[in-house]
Image 1: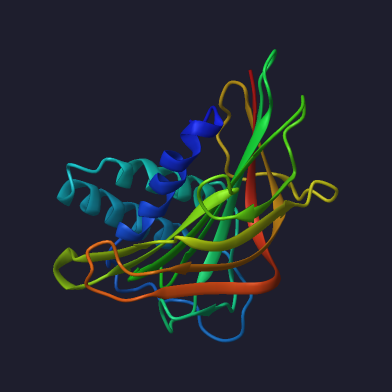
Image 2: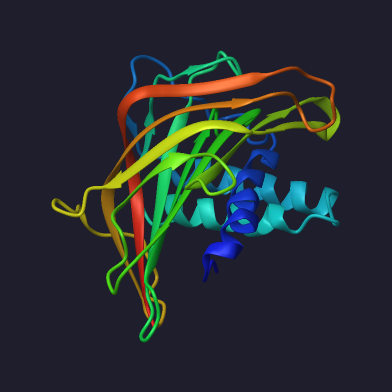
Length: 247
């Protein structure tokens, strides 16, 4: 759980590891046709879940794999729809589906804050690409509904790209420059999450996250691949699970 600003980098980096989801279940196909909302089936969610367990078992030194995947899979299991969205990127030529997580923390006697995570992935049965965006904002007694600014340092968040290769090989890029904007649509919430299981101090509702970004990575972390970028210069609307934490 992200509980203060200094923790956000580790948490957002953890979120990016979902890209380690690998191929399985050949009876599930990826998104085709024009961009639109996709309700993933139980089989698709189970396919992702199974692949995550395999990836985590094959990477015992990085349990962030399992932590991240649990977060993203929770979104899908809660009944939040994914949405195919066209963006400008050279990370992949495949169509990408996106889901969002908005965590809003109200802490008695302390500053409230919010985190945002947007995860884009290709064919859920054969995941080979992931684009991850994360943001953070704090202030006042009410969790903020928006964040906008640069990447890293004193900026609002982080971003990361991943590609899966044969034999479980993973290439990743840590974004080093660019900007992001996250705005939660708190005026017209979509109602309670249909598949959410009650948790003490936590409520779940669906909302729309309005996102635009323009982010660049200078090269892969292992030096094997060059620069990559991803952008949506005007707002795109991402189906989102909002989790309200009150302590």
